[in-house]
Length: 88
Image (cartoon, rainbow, N blue to C red; front, side, top):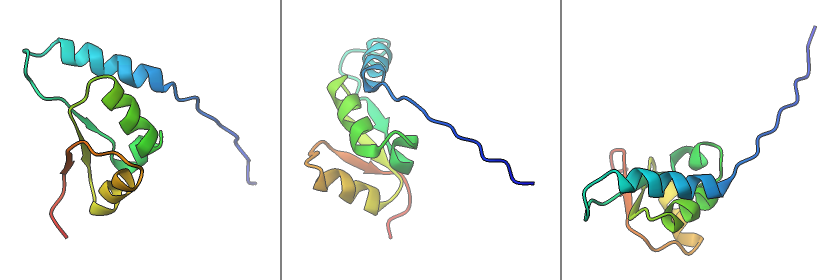
């Protein structure tokens, strides 16, 4: 017997920005903060998550693949992007 399960999530991008501000406030002044948005922002949507994190004060973004970085660039995001895996 197959059971259908419906689920939904509500992503509050404002919380992402607040979390970045809170965590960054715990570091020494001048410390750079990287928000990791790999795997499509862990289901949030990489572009949405990236914009929210940058709005909260993130200095750079982390991705797992070159394709993920390209998606961010094509969306107009110009902040530094760190590739967290081996180069292709």
